[in-house]
Length: 451
Image 1: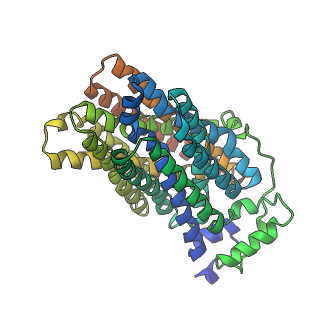
Image 2: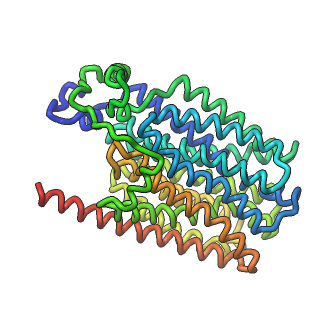
Image 3: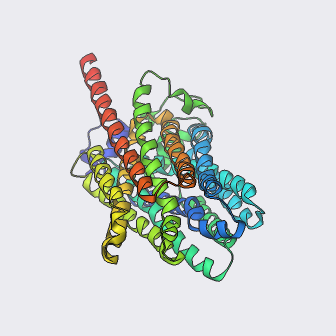
């Protein structure tokens, strides 16, 4: 197959058309592992929420801030730390952020109150924010055109799988020990993942082609050989090096094509505003509605089981239909599923279980669609920065979500009213995505006319 690929194409176009080798699949598998670990680290607070509230006698508002602290850190990591990956490399930033996140998770063992725990969650989030963006970018860069949507969909499967396993781990540990041990074990697993990444994950080829270091071209050619494409030359594919800074991501907000960044970021914000409410508050709200702590936790886990299926389905459906249209359809269906949550309390258990899985399926499938869209919306030299800024919008939505829910619960909003509010956010995400697609088509038409 490779021998029939035209030499007139750029290296990236040739790699997109070529079949994928074992090294590329291994890189994608390791990025899957990063997302799985991040799924544990991000949602460990949601799974221990009831135990922490009981131990420290916290209000819903304080719990809301604790649930948001990690997401605030992820926002900071996405905006200010991730752009450095475009200068220093994706791999070093992933390793550093994973080791740091693991350390702050383990340090939770010594947290003496909500303020200390909140700071540790914030610092953990900074590391997660950097690692999860780079895992998404690396997956996009190592996958070819045929398998890219599925590969990025698998990353969302990884996050949901990590969240599911994290919930199961939390359920076991909370029965047999103190809640702090859930964080400690999460930190240890993060360190183990970092060691596997250090051994098996190569640097991004697109990153090496920027030629920032003297031997980057030699490393790029060697990497091509390891990928089974040694007959491709890197010499004509050198990308002029720029000097990314920690503020580069923010510069994308007032660039000539900034509108598309704002629209994609707006869709991310609204989608994650809905997602983090569902994942962060569902176990606590189910328990508050009368279920046992075990059943409330099981309800939260079911969302992530559905999430794994949804992210995988997105990748498969995107091979047949336009990726963004599939994601948009899942968002709209998710609106109806969230609106059905409270009436479902009178349903049979199998029907309620099916609804929980359906909500996870639809929302996580939507997220996988936006994650697959983001890397291809920015040039290589600013890809980490671009993905970082739109994911910062996502983190802002996730950060606001639990806090808003906490305040509204304190104001005696009903649970049904909350789910209706967050269903509306999902609809807003679909509208923003529609305007993003429209601006994308307009830009393409303009480019064609100029040429």
